[in-house]
Amino acid sequence: MAGIEDKTIAKAGQRIALFVAGVGVFWILATLVGEALGLSQRVRVLFDLFALAGFGWALWMTIDIWRKRQTKGR
Image (cartoon, rainbow, N blue to C red; front, side, top):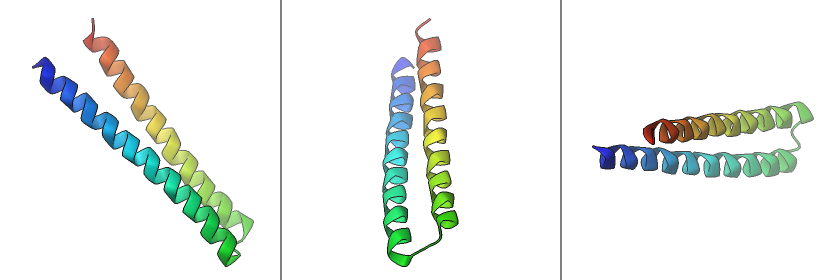
């Protein structure tokens, strides 16, 4: 059973890593497209806030995985 939990935690970590990479790519593309299209600063800030929310969610999930591993070790 311990092996199944380890695999589940590893899969969750991989999903978070892919999510963080995706948010990073979105943020870069949104910045470049916003500049190329001449979008207003308000719209650019909105994209920045979306990216910030994504990074915050990823941090939250990473802490959750860390807590699960800490309680598993007890």
